[in-house]
Image 1: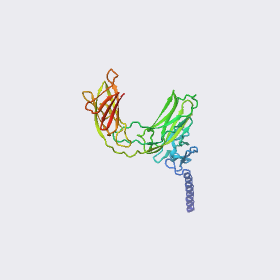
Image 2 (image 1 turned 120 degrees about the horizontal axis):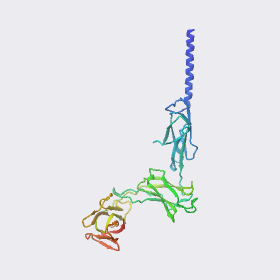
Image 3 (image 1 turned 30 degrees about the horizontal axis):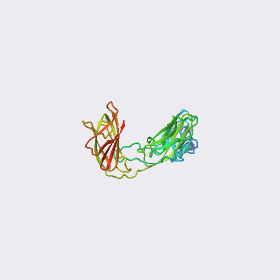
Length: 380
């Protein structure tokens, strides 16, 4: 009897253990892939509400529930990745009434740790196909959508704001303006930051009789890279809530042609400054050829200026500077001045050692080596 009683006790313990293991397995099956915290089946399983169905994106790998402490990882896939952008991925907490903006990892996935309450995921994404006309705006047919990346010819080559421009014309009277459109907000952004970053873009507008007639997106060619990028212009009509125009175009950035080396000489120019101080000498090669290593622009600043190079001034108030030039090319120098005397009369006195200098009709022409330099005066 003792052996029989002991055997019955063992069988009962085995049965209890089997029921416990089965219950645990059933709990684990409710949390596939869950890990961390109480994942593994212990505690309450909380609901995860997915975003509403969308034609712009799909969500991959998001379970419909998890346990407190589980790390949930998922991806947001754009239906048209080249034409779309994810503005925000946000998690809303049901009971604590708070929101958390999620940031994508290096592999493009998002993750969060499951709280002890129901959560709701929302995704804000926009689809931007190329659009030539929308509401009250129309892209100008003259816009050039293929631009060349600016590359310096030399280490001291300066960029002179040779921006590419996309013009959008106000093609009809916006709602609520009464024919007088002057209150608006505008912004432009790029869908490919590696090709055209947002800091290469700026938006201005033109007006006639205080009525806005067009918007211009300027693209700084010194900040772009080779490839294609979509540029989005959004103009909101400040005179009617919810009224806006969204224009989109694809811009292609190309590599400039290889730089060709040309013959270059140097010339030292001296001239006397009377009754004024020169802030900047700006040289321009009027015969400049693209894709050569000759400088189209050269600037010389007054001594002590924050920029360089700087010209020198001797005791007789003669300024001396040395330019690099291509034989046979014509050069123009614009002199930005600040008057130091009482009179408004401006005068240039050329050093007599500068052969070929001739001053007439307010211009000083310096001929040498089959080329010329023309000085013109501008107030600074």
